[in-house]
Length: 210
Image 1 (tube, rainbow, N blue to C red):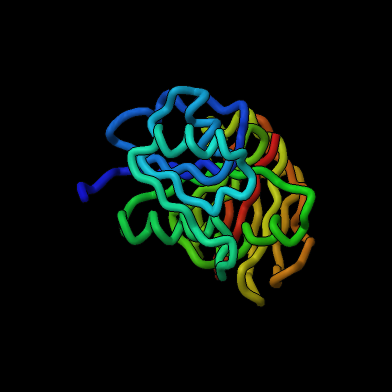
Image 2: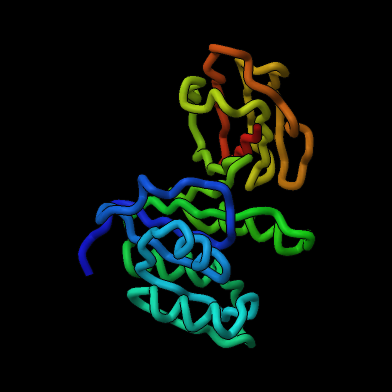
């Protein structure tokens, strides 16, 4: 299979505009009702993959007819549908960045699966209309404020214990240790026209929200 530059995985319906992804530079995967969102927006669907337990029979027929490739997973499986889609994307395009569209659900356990994704995968962004989640490897860097002017809040979670963390040019500067599961660095905020500076000794997850 040819080497696509970026993979887009859509797992739910959103108000996002996907027009800029609707070209040959992107391989687009739909999961569950994310397939229907892509169809409604007239976006190509290279692969539909899911157990499809959240779609109606007539909707499933529509997805089968629209998708270039279709894979129906067993209801009884060891992996969540979105994680299967991620594993499939990595197998097809080992070096491609992955953009993963997802929204919080009423189930805390499902929402916590996001941290597993961040822990397992590099170069994956999770986003929706309101938030963006990225993994930051160990090191020192700046976040370009101009790229995220629509965002207000930043929260940081460590993927390993004893993470030596320095946050500068944010509403609440921080210098200290951040451990796994710590909420010490939740709900920081951008300062207008300033680039946050981040130094971390272990991998870090940042969640930016409007």
